[in-house]
Image (cartoon, rainbow, N blue to C red; front, side):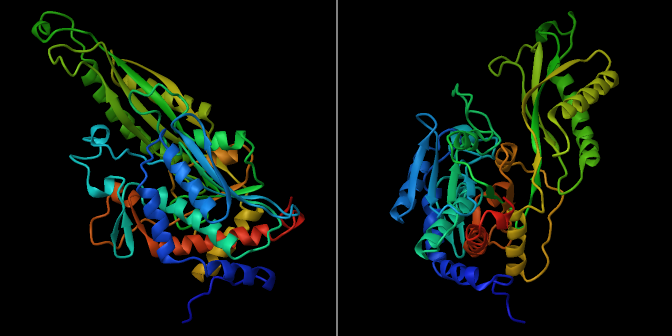
Amino acid sequence: MTAPDGLAGLDDRRREPIAAAWRHVTADRLRDLVRGLVDVPSPTGREGPLARHIADTLAAAGITAAAQPIDDRQANAWGRLRGDGTGPDLMLYAPIDTLTTGDAGEDVPWIGPELRPDMRAEARDAGDLVTGLGASNPKGHAACVLMAAEAIHRAGVPLTGDLLVAFGAGGMPTNALPGDARRNTGQGAGCSFLLEQGHWTDFAVIAKPGWTVSWEEVGLAWFEVTVHGVHTYVGSRHRLPYRNAIAAAGEVAKRLEAWFPEYAERHTEGTVAPQGVVASVEGGWPRMAAVTPAACRMLVDLRLSPRTTPMQAKREFAAAIEKIRADLPGTEVAFEMVLAIPGTASDPDMWVCRSAIAAWEAMAGRPHEVIRGNSGATDANILRGRGVPTVRIGMPKVTDAPFDIDFSMGMNTVDVREMERLTRHLIRTAVDTLTRTRAEVGL
């Protein structure tokens, strides 16, 4: 059977330019690009050096580009290929910050007993694979966006609308690192700033993991749960009132963990299955084991369907906490919602979704396969929430490797062959969109 050429469904006006751009996509160039991104550390809130590296890389290819400082440590990067003004503008977007830092003092022991080589900002080759902190998510995907812009530019494709390639700081679901008083890091801060500064388009495609075209995803709400107890001394446990907030928090956490699957089942719909976790526990003085604290705090991440508002989720969570109080008489537990980003959805019949699905089907040689049961959130929520119709497309997690693939290794390992496929998809979707009039795409 002949492998599909990926150009099915295109007329000559688009087939030839796309094929021309594809000829500039090479494994060697993709490997160079992702290695360059991995080797520049970019923990959330400290993306400035990588943003400058990306802007310099685009400029060296002849593309108008710049880093966009947010403050003295974090920045976005962007590049623009101008169209003639008769067509729609399209953004290809990828975040650039890593979930962990690559610093043993910050990551260990929470990431494991030590930092493996893949957990450091040092790229390593392993055949068709490249490993290193964030090599797949997000940096392998960012490298594909870079390559797509370079290839379209080198092929000299005449565009009707602008192609904006954008690389956002703060794409990971995290707040500032310890000791950092800034409140504008993580949680889509870079993407929001990008739009606020005028880098707006008619449509967007975000490159994040998953070989499928997705038009919706979960949001998230964070709850700080406080369990109260009595501050007392181990030597007086048998003489004074004793209510250990840490022990009580453990009971609360167990019941929340039992409730999360029930919540997920109620809200599984469309392509999402929103999950929840108890993510951290804080209580007591590590320097002083002789006393109990008067309070123990836990942080909960509860994912939100696009059909569930933060306030609806807050009320469901309140009902769960009330039931826990009833199940644990005498337990004092309170909570506050401390962060909320709604889930979002775009119309699956809008232009860029149809174009991206057509590209997927032409490349795969079969009908599009929708991946369901998703609980991952991205900056697509920021884009859609501001009114930019957005789809998500990415690479599958590496499974065929000469080493075990756990969660971290999946984030930190990219297959260059999959990078080629994703880049070709991004190019086809971009050229298919940016060689049309606004009327042709429904604007």
